[in-house]
Length: 402
Image 1 (cartoon, rainbow, N blue to C red):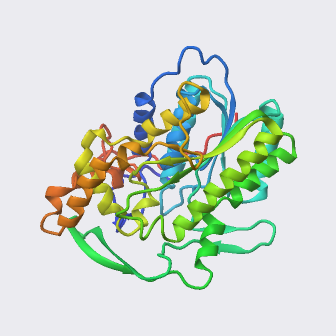
Image 2 (cartoon, helix red, strand yellow):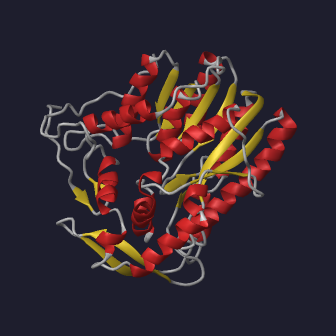
């Protein structure tokens, strides 16, 4: 494919193309912002990161490689470039992450495939056995997907974003074709039929548990093995569509799965399982949820630079997993990385702005410039230091295993 000058073209918050140079620079900036490892971390444990190419999964991978000194396998599901379209942003970010891993001599294999499938699980198991000494010390699970096919039954489940029990009305933030912000009231119909069960089947803990079963069945989990699934709790302002809705039911199932796995792994390997409750961020998943865009923009308006990035949160998570910091579990056996967001004074300030938010006032209440840029950066645009007037090669290869 010839080099092209790429400009951001979108339908709402979804962009049609991604920018390779912007994605690469974004990963490089994350890498440079990540602190060096503690000097006493002189080993290189094997980790498996599932969902490694975007959002919190990408932050987990960068922090793991540079801060936690891990080696291992990263799994994601991305689309390659075609004659008409660029590759997905995660494709380019993975290529950039692989280059940085090689630059410090870190042995990391990046697999592109459906993490829900048994075929990918078998590929990972084979790599652990052949390349990484037959044992994995950490498994970090960060998967958000619209559907999942159960490898045993062949049934395909689809997740939905719906409240449970009654329609839910909320404010939400949209931008018109000229980029002007508008605050609207939207109503979402409640879940019906098997919507809750389908969403739990996709976004709950079933696949996470299958990963543990698959690797344990091949004796590939090390003594003291630890696993973490990333989750989100969120504000009371968004609870009606999120934590009290179908996605919330899936998150509750994920947390219940963690408690079950914690008992099993404790008995089997003196290991453990927890969920990590992360704070708000602009991600491809979050922008699809009614009200979340408005909430996140207002939160940034309140906190400014004090808002903790996904990288900052995942550095803290790896420090806790590797023993550089206290685990700090809540009564539900969850690592809490969202205290900066859910502090009473922060939520009170955001709630005041939420009540006052209209199309006429939103520019004074939310950090809209930051929010617009964050959405564009999901696709490699609006990244400082990138010349978007330059043509770029879009046919970037997936990183070879080496």
